[in-house]
Length: 343
Ligand SMILES: CC(C)(COP(=O)(O)OP(=O)(O)OC[C@H]1O[C@@H](n2cnc3c(N)ncnc32)[C@H](O)[C@@H]1OP(=O)(O)O)[C@@H](O)C(=O)NCCC(=O)NCCS
Picture 1 (tube, rainbow, N blue to C red):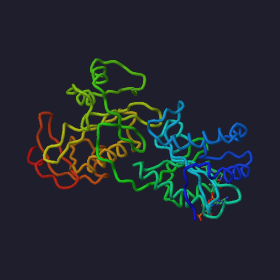
Picture 2: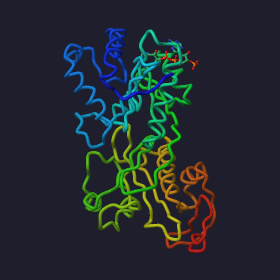
Picture 3: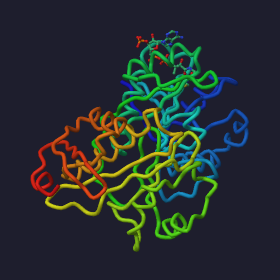
């Protein structure tokens, strides 16, 4: 039987036997480096290290620069440590490009026996419990065993970057109801705009992590009414993971009324065309619907790219109306009670 076990000194003999088997090979997903060997051989230091591996899972633990919380597990088969696997709870630019959410390794003597396949399945369940969906799992292009392991978990290749194949794997985590915090999407973080940032945007201040052209007129309209701290409905920066730049905004036109909430969104010119808005809007809609809300959106009749995104996400055009700025189309997912007659 294969289990994922929190690192424990009860398994230290088995751990060291596995490390010896790896020799100088990197043990992915272990947080262990061969250069640590001598220092960690002392039982007290080892115990401290094992304890630290466990604490890395806690969101309140102070971690070194560049590290994110992670669930570190040892892959145990019939009581013996045969590998390591780690689920990182968030992505940094370097994890986006290379490391991904999950890293793993199986000891040479236990390979080709289905260990990685089962360990990855169990790790996906761990990610799902933490609400992470989908996860990024990467491997070198020539790592056939790892690519097959990821494929067997339902991984879909997004691209290859510098010899690294990047796959996304669904974990089946239910969407989280929307709150006032950031929303994580596959390609972006949706970070609530603070009143100070809103003021800077309105004052025409330029920040280095705002993409050329951001904020757009529509982004300024969205923040125009902000006075207090961010809530679930207020605008968020769309921060692209690949470069950390804010490339647009997304938010709701105020709190829900009669269970219906309207979303507004937009990206700068250079961020269009790569599927980013589909990804971002889909995450937003999932969170709003997980809160029991019906989501609607307005578009101009000529805004074909926006129609495409909405249609791809299952929205239907439900009404046409005359607004001050001209004709508008109303789009909805699910049944919209009051919202249609209001337009
Ligand atoms: C990659 C690795 C984790 C695979 O572990 P494993 O326990 O041997 O994998 P499994 O036995 O579960 O096999 C999973 C799939 O990969 C295939 N596979 C595994 N090793 C393979 C190899 N060397 N060549 C071709 N296919 C291989 C299996 O046939 C199986 O395919 P299937 O699902 O189509 O039947 C292991 O080789 C390893 O630890 N390598 C070094 C570290 C590493 O590369 N980690 C991943 C970093 S991204």
